[in-house]
Image (cartoon, rainbow, N blue to C red; front, side, top):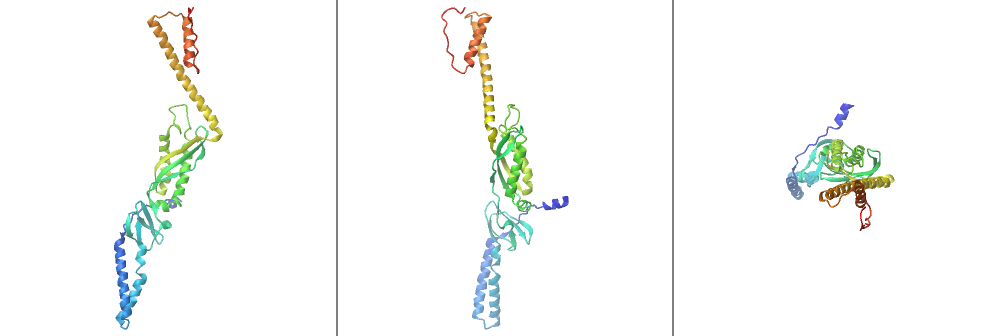
Amino acid sequence: MEKNAEKTYTYEEKEIHPVNGWAVLFITILLMVGALALTIWGGIESTDEAPAAALIIGIVIMAIGWFPLIGLKIMRPNEALVLTLFGKYVGTLKKEGFFFINPFCTPVGGGKLSLKTMTHNNEKQKINDLSGNPIEVGIVVTWRVVNTAKAVFNVQNYGAFLSIQADTTLRDVARCYPYDSTDSDEKTLRGSSTEVSEKLKELLQERVEIAGLEIIEARIAHLAYAQEIAAAMLQRQQATAIIEARQKIVDGAVGMVEMALKKLNESNICELDEERKAQMVSNLLVVLCGNKDAQPIVNSGSIY
């Protein structure tokens, strides 16, 4: 079984070097014109043996002389023609221009293959991330055909093959990362787009190598929590953001209070006992950390 499997995927691309098509076209036209002239001359002078033979030869040449025209092919840039001769792969024509190939050669698939860089965008799918949360994610892949023999012989349809492999790869990679994390050092789908893209590209390239495809880029095009948990996750994100903001506000307020007390002591503006210092610290923290503007009360008398 292993030997048979190896034989199945042994197709390697062979580039053929065809004959110039203009030369064949010119020779064919000259041959047809000569056959026409020979036929006309043989028809006029058909009483003799030589003209009669010329007539027959001219008719035969005109009947089959057009056959080389079937082998004329026009190739545009970034196009390829995979050719077989009686079922056997003979090579791939990738040059641009006007060429002549064996008229008995048959293009695989009945047409030309595009070698241009193409983009494939799969529909979004629901996947569970590393934390088990259901998320909706989609992938966009930039790719091209680099081995035409593998593309047409090793798989049934390389476009559909790429689509299935892209979905499978996206599922495998998305399950290895959480959607988001409070740990700044942890790799996530939302915050580590470069690392995730490289992982997608590497794994997808391994899987489509058999089809002769090159993955230029693979990126997540859509990423969101599934609808059933989107509202709850949004509340969690908002709560996390509020807590982080409050922590920064408190840290800043404590620093400002510390600086204010230090300035008062250095300037000897007034002396405060521990109770008054505590009251001052409390008032400053309320002012600095409050959600609303403070309403000051002016004390014109003694602070004691």
